[in-house]
Image (tube, rainbow, N blue to C red; front, side, top):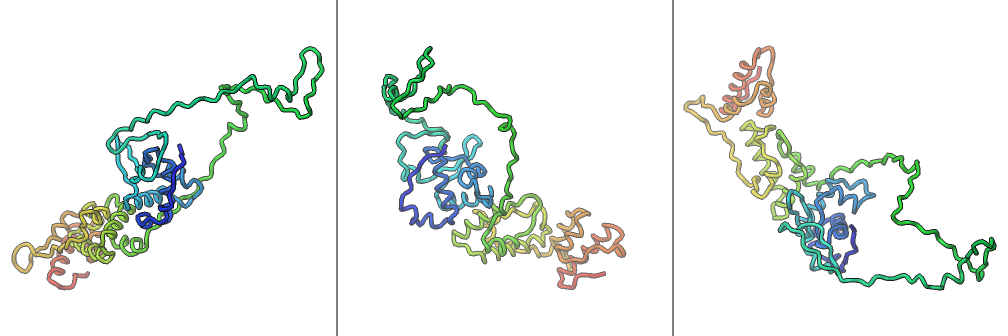
Length: 342
């Protein structure tokens, strides 16, 4: 249930809030009014969107999460889980909100719902039925006489008694539900440094690779002082490493969220495994091992990633022959010679 909250003048000049975008600040205020009296709201972006931005079709659920994450990154909101349910909690709630008779609905991070304080007893207002204010001015009818008594000139309408517990009659037309037009949610808008510079550089992988999670991980590292150039350079090293290993496009490619996460994988050297295994000039590098693990149907895609020619039916009559050809490509490439062509 929505409640009236206090908004101090210091809100507009807060340096902590100034780190958030304008829409995130507006969402922050809206979150107050729909949280319980401990500043806690269920972590449901769709519900929060309908509460704070019900008429804005350009505010998608995903965009709501971006703004919430922005508030979390700046220490204004925390997210926690109790019994499998996620919640958002405003961090400075008790400092800025004074609630006379609070009502608590959701559990604290410790796991329990606080006991609601006992409410002060209020004296109910009693309506005095003996009041004569309306008796002189109301229009009355004598029973049995058929004659209407006139009042003092200012007649007062007498409202019929309505039973509050009686069911409200429903007309046939009200039962018909009209279809509600659903507006198409606007796509997520990311900063240019992520959308056009960093994200296109990251290698594709088999399975999921959430873009939003990757953005928030990279944005957190950026706030810690790491530059976009540093993350791009680390990504390029990782891509080169994956190509040599033959892991591009497979599940062995880590998610971008992990790569830009707290472990800061982009700072690793990712040395290329170009050392030769075995003896003699015809040694075999680790790409041979990678080649042996690639399925027949994926041979051509693997070869393209390595920069080798696709299969040619005129020369390769089987997968076995094509594998032998790719092995020659690996050996010549390691020696610094041109890759064999047909």
